Structures are given as structure tokens and as C-alpha cells.
Length: 197
Image (cartoon, rainbow, N blue to C red):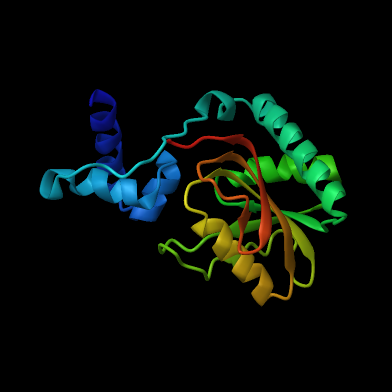
């Protein structure tokens, strides 16, 4: 319970700083449902939802370690694209933790870099692509993120790419916390799959 109390304390600190529950979930690599439970457990009680907390700070503190992970993810992306006989024009990094991985993967694959800032609403689409980077408009793209908890963020990105006339050909994540192998019809690959059983 000590770990749960520490995580709940961090969630409350983020809430006091003005972060939404979705932003807190992204920051702590938890599902939004788990964050809601952490923030209200003193009020509602009950059992926590099943979830797995993913921490990859040991990787994230050094660029070369991120590079090793990105190289493995690029290799997985190439393998999957060759198997499916598809290609991508660019790599979309999902803000914030997908960006460093996507930047290195786009370099490794020689593809354009696109940056996506998701909506901060749960189950929301309507995110935005940064105008400082390539646009997915009319292009085929590979989406990269760090942790897949519910799939809502990547589904929102897929929808937003489609609205611009682009196509998402593959999604690659560092860790997949689900049993899903596709999202909204898009193949999903992960370096690591972690889920409670």
C-alpha cells in the first residue's frame, strides 16, 4: 500500500498544479480510470481498477538509452512494414513522451517528423499537429508513443490524421499494456507487452 500511497500523493500534487486527469494519467503512465480512483479513493473507497504502472525513467534520463529503444522500435516498424508491404512518408511522435522516440526513429528510417499534441479530454479527438514539423496531410504515417494504456490517444491521432486526408499505416509503442494488436484498424506493435493477468 506504500507504493499506492506514493502514487496517489503524486497524482494529487499534479491535480493541485492544474493538470487534468488525462494529463496526470499520461505523466504517471496509468489509465485515466486508475487516476480517478487514486484521486477519489478516500471518498469512494472500493477496489482499484486493474492497471500496471510503467516507469521508464532509467531509459529517459539519457539520450543514448532512448536511442537504443528507438533503434529497436525502428527495427520492429521496418519488420512489420516489410511483412505487410507498406511504407510510411513520416513518423508521428505523440506528445510528450513519444516525441524523442519518434525523432530518433524518423532519423533512423529517413522519414519526415510529425508532432501530435493530443486532446486533453478523455476519449477525445481534436488534437493538433505542430506546424513547426511535417504535416500528415495526404501522407502515410507511422505513429510512435511510449506507453499504450487504453489506446484512446492513438485512436484520436488516427482520426485526426484521417481528417487531414492522411493514412496511418502502423502504430509502434515502447510498452503495450493491453491485449490489442490493432487500433481503429491500424496494426499495433510494441517493444514490450505488459498487462495484469
